[in-house]
Amino acid sequence: MQTSSSEVQQKKAIKLPFDNCQQAYDCLVRKIDEVVAEKGGKAVFDESNTEHIRKVAEWLCDEKKKMLVMCGSVGNGKTTTMYAIMRLYNGARMTRQNGYVLEFDKVDGFDLDHATSQRIEEVKNTSLLAIDDIGCDNVVVKEYGNERVPFMEIIYKRYELNGITIMTTNLTPEMIRKRYGEKIADRLAETATIIPFTNPTYRRK
Image 1 (cartoon, rainbow, N blue to C red):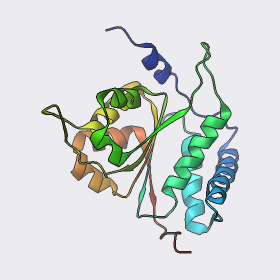
Image 2: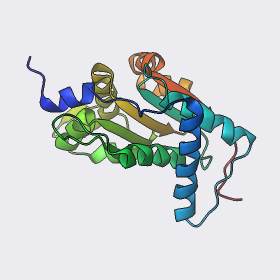
Image 3: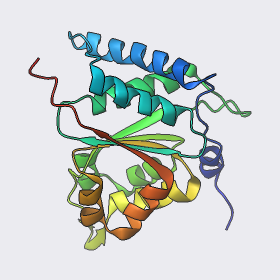
Image 4: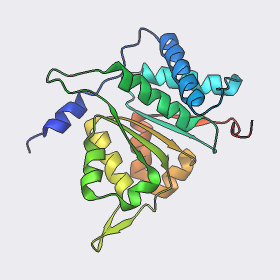
């Protein structure tokens, strides 16, 4: 089967060219500051949160692991960190030989229940993908009488194409396994860096 142009671009998706993990950490902290400041707040960099960010910075420098899963309870910085990563990539304006610019596409977990087939295909084949709040979907959805499992379809394709994908979730790794099955859990175990965010919510501070 002939490979589509979008799949070719996806297979060439790369990590940002940081010199080292400290540089990645410093850049990530600055972007987190920006995201929080735009919401009228001040970013908190306590011991636990700093450790999470350092692990994310290590993932940014890891050429092998193309997926990132940030899991934990609500309000502890997962989505903020996701937006910071997106800003790093989108701001870098990395291009391919044909002028194609790598930018993140983002989808919310709860939107997967009513996303069109066309939208799911776009998400599956985009160069860089962010999925916020996986686990908010109904797992199985019906489309014209046919059952689909959008999240599983997306992960299968991202796995096949080795696409850079970042995800946030309130589910634990074991809950992901129970919800989506062994195949999804095994693919994530192989291709994803899974970082539990253990700190409590910052929203009440």
